[in-house]
Amino acid sequence: QVQLVESGGGLVQPGGSLTLSCAASGAIARTLDMAWFRQAPGKERELVASIARSDNTNYADSVKGRFFISRDNAKNAVYLQMNSLKPDDTAVYYCYAFILGTNYWGQGTQVTVSS
Image 1: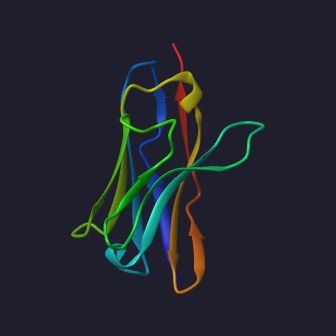
Image 2: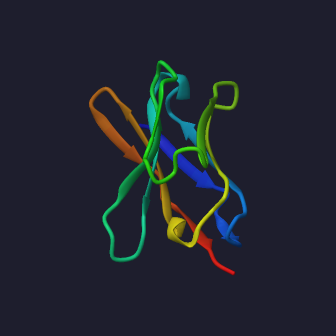
């Protein structure tokens, strides 16, 4: 059983930065395909960024050049560095992992971008 615990959300002003962390247990992070999704009120959950076991990364067009996903194998964690934040980035951010045909989700962390 894989468990994912997010942290690092909060309130930030437009143009600011935040780093989200996702700690994985029950599996080694480097063996997982992992990603960050987000869901804003009234909208569907959408993929923000992903990092494969090969460390290949992929980003939604809306965050390219502003968000960066990375993995720390020693800490069994994945991070999402978010820069130049906009009010449209306001959402609950979820950590996601896929292994052996099973999807795993974290509980989510709220990110609010507002002045």
